[in-house]
Length: 181
Image 1 (cartoon, rainbow, N blue to C red):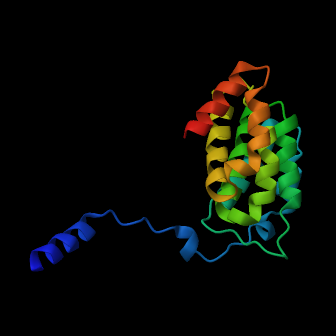
Image 2: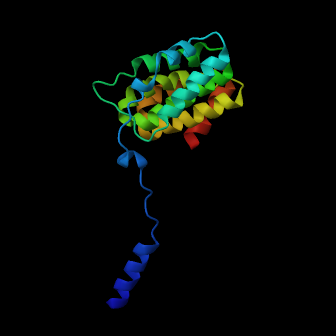
C-alpha cells in the first residue's frame, strides 16, 4: 500500500502545473481615460503614419492583462473606430494594427467584449481576402484570442458557413486554417 501511495504522489508531481492566468491577479486598468483627444485626432488623420501611431498606442494600452469593464466603461467609440479602420482604411499596416487592437481588447476584456467580438467575426473572415500576409496573420491571431476568451464556434457558425462558401478561395483556405488551430 505504501508503494501505491508513493507512485500516486510521484504521478502528481510529474503532472505539469497549469500556468497562472495574469488576468486573475491583475487589477483592472481603465484605458479609456488614458485615451486623450490627440488619440482621436490621430486616428482620423490623413497621414497613415499618424493613424498607425494612434493604433499602436491603443494596442499598447490594451495589452495590459485585465482591462476595466462594466456599466461605466463604454468601449463603443473605440470599437466603432476600429471597425471603420478595418473596413475602410486603405493602408494595410493600419488595418493590421486595428485588428491587433481587437485581439488585445478581447484578451483584456474577455466576456465584456463578447458581443463586439461576435460582430467582428464576419468582417474579419471577409478580410481574409486581403493579399497582405501581415493582415492575414493579424486576423488569425485576433480570431484565436476572441475564440479563446469571448465566444465558442457555435456562436459564430453562420459567419464561418458564409466564409466557407465565399467566392474567394483565400477566404475559404484561411478560415479552415483558423479552425484547425
